[in-house]
Length: 300
Image 1: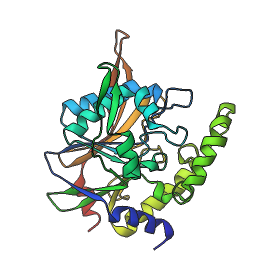
Image 2: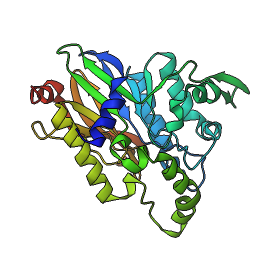
Image 3: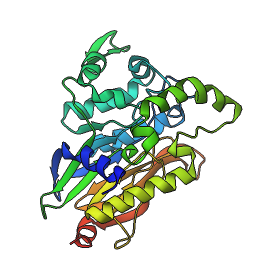
Image 4: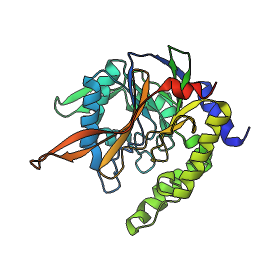
């Protein structure tokens, strides 16, 4: 077993187990990278799409799982500034949380969330400008490194991680990477330089990380869903069992994985145009629903 397989196995060892069945509705998103509304806030362009998508999922009874890097805490030091900037997004997430339908994982860019004291100090409440007082946000919340979805029908499992566990620079050396992003690459990006620590901006690095995750899924005979690379992956049955939900910072759209009625699909949310040239936020299915048992059966 190699170094990265050990990292992934260590992450899932203490995972929270969430059962689901044919009646369950789950949506998985990652890599929102919510910022403070400045030029480096990649989430700002898609914030209305995100709010519209979550409003839809809330209305139709989905459980929302955020698969890491929800908040950009490498470029920004204070999560309270992020919450203030994107208070509408945090409000809708708090509604999911109040109804026990929200789970958060941490990634490399928000790895500080693994500290319960950080969550208790910064995420218990927030200041609501509409009511001019503090309101509950995520009281007593636990942020996980991994979650296991266990299918009640067959007992099979789906393993959820952010994916940075397969990335040496952004897991083992995350403090160095954070330093480089915060003090070197953030200002240089203004001049057109690409951050070499980022899997999202380096195709060669994406390929390497995906290969490690595919190898883990194949060798361990498990279904895994990750983020981190910002590149969607939806394998054909019999190909492999590594999925990726993409990100919420694609140009002009966000992507998500949906699990409904024992099936899995990949969707995109974007601003679309009607024939009369009015705009609306719409959902488009990129990969049609496939019964999960078809993937589970390939692992037996």
